[in-house]
Length: 119
Image (tube, rainbow, N blue to C red; front, side, top):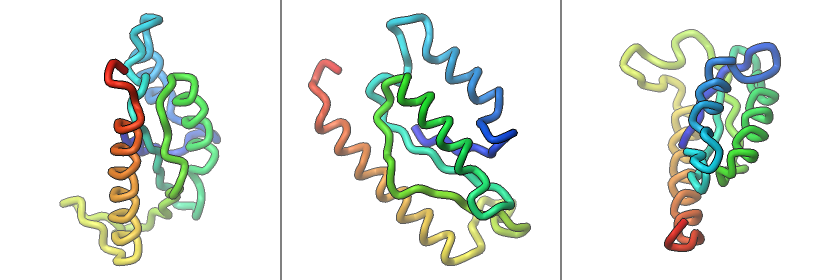
């Protein structure tokens, strides 16, 4: 699962936290157990989502979701960075995101290879 989040008051949005809480219940039926996850965010500041991402990682840790810890991704959003069609206009950012997704794909494969068959 790839989580993309803004930062609200130095944390994750309440709606995202609520959705995670609902998906982790009832006890014993946590939808995140053994599901590989990664966290990324964007804001006008250079690392504006750093604290939100840290809070989200803490929540996902409680939910027993294996997390890709590196590379970290803090995307500085500027007008025109992403077109209406979803294209990233900055070549450096586009390359970074492509590499990030390749790393996440490899992480997912490592997690599922390491898990016992009945997990």
